[in-house]
Image (cartoon, rainbow, N blue to C red):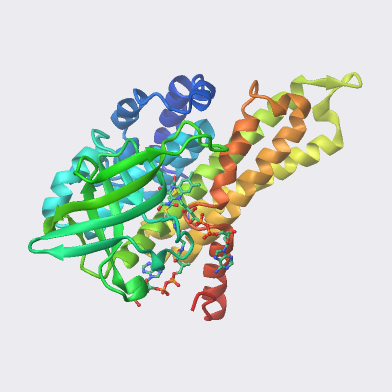
Length: 383
Ligand code: TGC
Ligand code: FAD
């Protein structure tokens, strides 16, 4: 693995940081308090290429490599994880699924819109009764002539109330994970309803929703991939999604490091900057180490994707380590800040609240451990 970044990769990272420092960092606390990102930032992010990174130029994207994608997700996580989720769900989970499994018509219909963020997507896998055990979900799609009719409920869906298209996984036969099929459902379809979930611990600027599908009718041309292949589509897409979460977490750890160093150099106690105390340096050294280790795991995974190598277990390792590191780093960053870290005058309390979900979504830490354990032992804990 070559650890040096190309000039293009560095240039995109610098451009992204500069943009987010101007357009996101000054507003993130207000968005958090208002429980809504100002969506006026979305077209500006699209103009810079954030939404097109995973989409080829032929479909309106910028067709970047996955190391660049990882850098972009890191910068978004450092600035505001709510923004990272908007991009990585819409163009990553949804756009990438369409790119990898869609018909030419589906690609032409949705990818240019997702790449330009003139449409947003959401990814509907989790249900009230099935989170980790996604292969057992119960939403149904029944064939009716040349259409499908969908009924069911989805829970905790990022972008749910903002999305124009929902990638919905529904049961088309009673064959466990092999009985699921994926559908691209326009959210304006009759019978489709999204209800906002509010008062979250973190990611408060990001829309999270419950989806209700009641007799939603879509043509067979809205089916993504083959009948019965929905679970494989979801799992393959989530492997790349886990890289995005891991990279966003690297950004949280990096943000915690920068905030802690700045505060520790400035704040004096006992007549000295608190940065001169060895126990404070211990906290900062731990955050610094976590930033490096998490970043290397994320880059290793991105590099495997770029080289066309298997990367699923590397994605689980990066996601597991980086998400746990983000919680640890944010917690220690608050410790460095003392009482000041407990209020929103500094970014560290928000980092902790935002970090907390990272060990839960896109597969909990326990699920990542079991995926890694299965790869090491050859024995599945799930069957
Ligand atoms: P298993 O029963 O063994 O396999 C069923 C079929 O699926 C295939 N498969 C894969 N295919 C491609 N890529 C992968 N990574 C695959 N993993 C499994 C498998 O080959 C088999 O195919 P076939 O041909 O034999 O029929 O299923 P499993 O044991 O692998 O799955 C169990 C488990 C627990 C790993 C899986 O259910 C899982 O990952 N659960 C976690 C669910 C999850 O991650 N949900 C995330 C929802 S999205 C979200 O949280 C977005 S957050 C927003 C944001 O990121 O900002
Ligand atoms: P459960 O699966 O009920 O797990 C509860 C606990 O049991 C966890 O600690 C888990 O690790 C443990 N556990 C479960 N099974 C095992 C096992 N076999 N061995 C050991 N421990 C186990 N989903 C989407 O589809 N799309 C989205 O866009 C999306 N966005 C989200 C946004 C937010 C803010 C949140 C909070 C969630 C989002 N999710 C989304 C859902 C998320 O993916 C699930 O919450 C997650 O997969 C866990 O499922 P669960 O909440 O049902 O927990």
